[in-house]
Length: 155
Length: 155
DNA sequence: GCTTGACCTTCCAGTGACAGGAAGGTGCAG
DNA sequence: CTGCACCTTCCTGTCACTGGAAGGTCAAGC
Image (tube, rainbow over all chains, first blue to last red; front, side, top):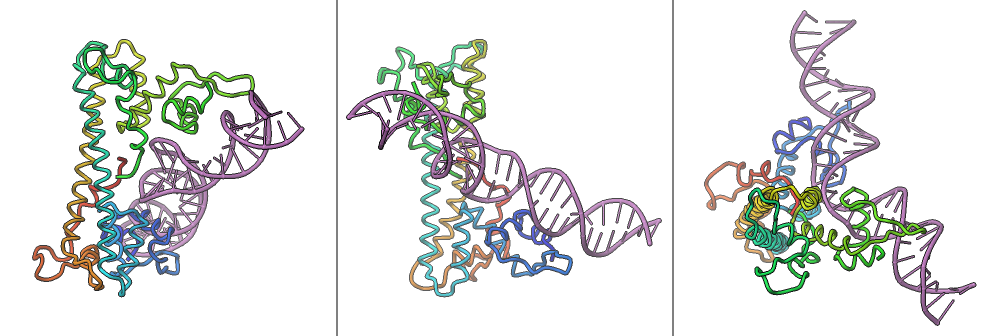
């Protein structure tokens, strides 16, 4: 089986498979005389394992760990379950972060009439101006001040 | 005001501010004779606007758009609200994706006793094996086959 | 034998939004 | 004048790939 056949059977791209080989996630493939990579049925299973793990949000590094555990006959199921639990916790963290963003955004939108007029409370609030008579707390600071805790991460 | 003072007042880092200048998100700062960037109070407002927008999940490109709208006295509030709505939709999409991942993960975990024994249904299912007597549908395919729709994105 | 087109190879660059660090210049207090 | 904190630019690294260039290989059809 050539690389694009394997790609088709696993839902990955040939590029991705070569990439996984290059970073050592999978061992180097056997080559034909002409240098073409050849694969067997075992490789389909391995790459599907990887694809499924990635689709569950595990990082490539985590997948490497999972592959090791999978090959290791002496590992305990508790180890694997712990990794999965950690992944669930990470997902929960991201959902919480996104939920806070969503709340802040819809709060902003609620104050905006959203019509033809140029006056826009969303921009005013992003700039730190709080319109009189709408919220009485804080003086030009604190409206959306979670940003240090809110810094980037992967889905 | 030097760059690190501005950084402190906005919650960004000096690196980030220089980066924003380098990609043209903010105009080039005025320099002292020695080449130091100097900033005024207006810059605090602009950078806070940027920091708040970023913390709401807007991409740097989106923030550029928001800044343009902010400066543009003739834009309508509807335009801004539409951008915010788009951002909310994006957040919802990510939450849905994460929620599906979470569900699939907890389903897997539910079948794993998580003890000292090496037998692990999580790994078995990632590899495509469905243990007899637990689920009768599908034959080695289809268990977690959403991966094409599940491919990467930012929080 | 020759061409065509689909495959395969390697290598390099780009993505987004910065962070880290090196090498060197500046400003000011003691 | 000696620290030390700050500033500058430039280069590299992150993560998980993707795109593309330049070139080799294979099988089919003429």
